[in-house]
Picture 1 (cartoon, rainbow, N blue to C red):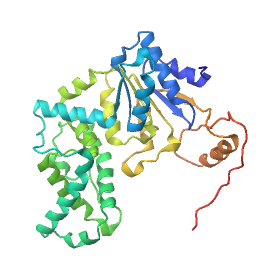
Picture 2 (picture 1 turned 30 degrees about the vertical axis):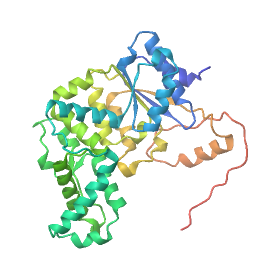
Picture 3 (picture 1 turned 90 degrees about the vertical axis):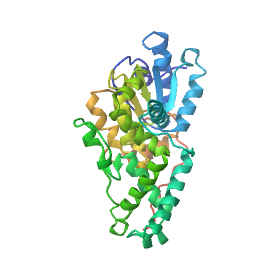
Picture 4 (picture 1 turned 180 degrees about the vertical axis):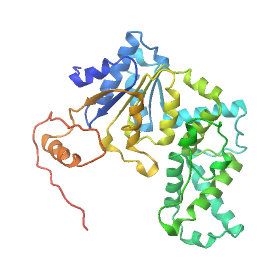
Length: 340
């Protein structure tokens, strides 16, 4: 397969931090896999010392399937960011830094179980907000909890022990209630929710990240163990990472900064769980990365690309780029406005 000049530039990147802005349908996975294969074939990195990751299980599964078709790449480590965090937690259990739960509960069941227990205890303890629970929207409250954890906003930060100095003091923050005044009691319920979770020792998907990051900054030996596993890190869909994920990756790549991230800041869609495009834009600038673009869109017809460029250019917080035409014109797309 012939690569475009933009793809070839990415494939040719050897070491050091790099940031790739890849528009939709640009063949970023192709560029990633060709780069990994070259790094291995030329002996720059051993395959089992390369981590290919993403927040998305689907993305990691697809990447793993593609890499398995390249003989030199079959030993490359493919893991979700949640899996990385959970690996830290398992090691903390083994080292005795964290009490292992007496009863196991699947991560996807934890939030609902904690929610029900928190409501029951709030009523039993006659807490001030117990009457509000009758109309509580479970999905809304759990989204609030997920957002807090993704941003490393703790229900009670005073209970978390960190070293006296260090940047984590500015990263971890006390949670705040929602902006709606009538939901101010969410913070109190979040505190009860976390009290129960601590007693049970359960780990939700959000806790894999929050607790994983916390354990890394609390225990240098856990951090060193994780850092010693990889010499090269490649992260896809980086536009949708949250503070906890960015924090884990920042710690993981610190010894070498052979750290390439790929994403499209125009496609950030997981803000509801704490994702912030600033981690791809402003925060990643701290590494002084080499910047690349992949702008050829191979998926859409020209009329769709023209319309997309016209709409997306109004975004203010973005890296300037344009989708490039590769297909002919088809049917003219219709732009509609929402009803107001």
